[in-house]
Image 1: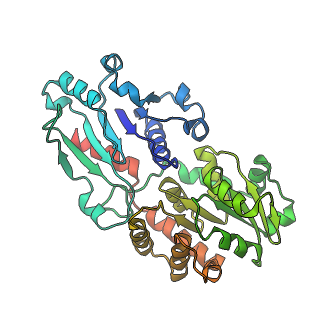
Image 2: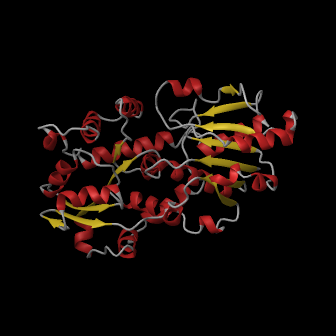
Image 3: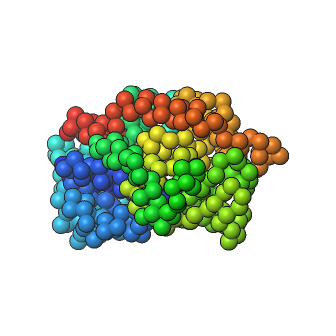
Length: 375
């Protein structure tokens, strides 16, 4: 089938990250995708070659093209329309195809509103519900809400069919050392065996200084791998030009493609992640993780975080760590509260979550089933 996926890039790369993963997964399953973006710049490092046709089954198109009459006149009608994260398809695009179909309901695409990921109870109630279009050129058509989620009554999580096999290749002896060398971060065999690798992909948590202090004075040797952008700037604002302090050394990573980011999470012993896409990838990595949820002005994100942690069976220490990491103001007891859970117990918790969620249907598969059912 041919899919039109629409995405307005707001900030922080999560929206385009999810949409590209979905597009790539559909293409891997022999689907054809047109990905409409108002800002494709992040794909230059996230998926090099994406905008120049390196993926034969994916065509990346500028959002403004969906408003251009001449562009629309030459477009093949798609089988599926996906509005990602509440963005709305441009009115000229809808009007053009409404006129082309001229009331023939059999030609209508399956129109999906792909929503944000949440563990809140309303997701199960709202998933797959119809939403009739009440006005405009597509009046009488039907959209459907489609919710990713953590139960069988939702759309599930993005998980490529070959993910487990790819991950196995990075669990072979010597794989971690080779991977570090590829990034220019090679360690000798003794330090590699004793170092705890920790990835950091975050906004600007108030608790960051406390985390760094914890790692500096920790009994472990810690190697903090800092992603570019906001995490990089936040760490440098604390450490300046220092890259070593007592039991902590810090490396600043270059921009990583999506497969390389997955590799980062697979190789690290602890992953600090943010947003939606990296949370899901941290779950599939099966390693201990801490989620920095996107902050909202009304504090609603803290409720969402709490529900997620409770639904996924987080331990009391994991709950406490997330509470501190996501606090907007750092309290006086932060250093003690930021003590990381025991590695072995934390690892068991992460492995159990990966195993449990891995039993659920995955998002692309449920989307395909839904589309076929509603065509």
